[in-house]
Length: 171
Image 1: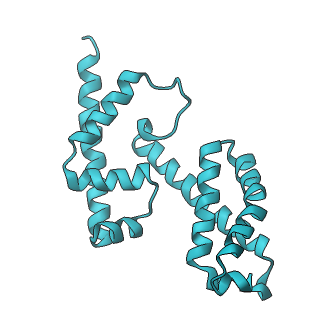
Image 2: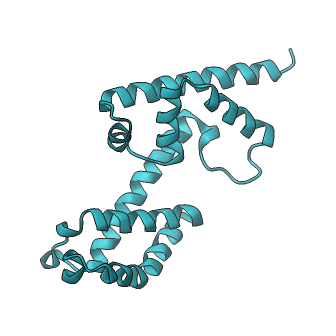
């Protein structure tokens, strides 16, 4: 790891080749979600790259450190997914046949009708699964503004999609 910590690019590739499969296996067995598992593994190595100097061999093996990073990322993403399911169940990953193509199009249309400032926050938060702090940094906004815009966007989506579903129901 010390070669890697000091900038050896081949070391990162070696670490990735050595640990990607065990990390993927762990995440996949936990979630049974292949794309999610791949994302968590990728995010784990991104986090390792960003925080490579924080690894301390005195505190444990590199493998344990990577599993700890992967587990924390997985739990954070799963908790975010649960939050999204309670707020906007139609935006969370569902089995392929859960929603009709018409429903999917309605959601896409509702998101596209949001004001640009709110749409950006929804897309970064939901589709890219970014935490508020990262969205704040990307959009160069205070974190409170990000939270406020996200809340407003959710309310606007609920209202728009609720109206559509009520219009479609016969009296």
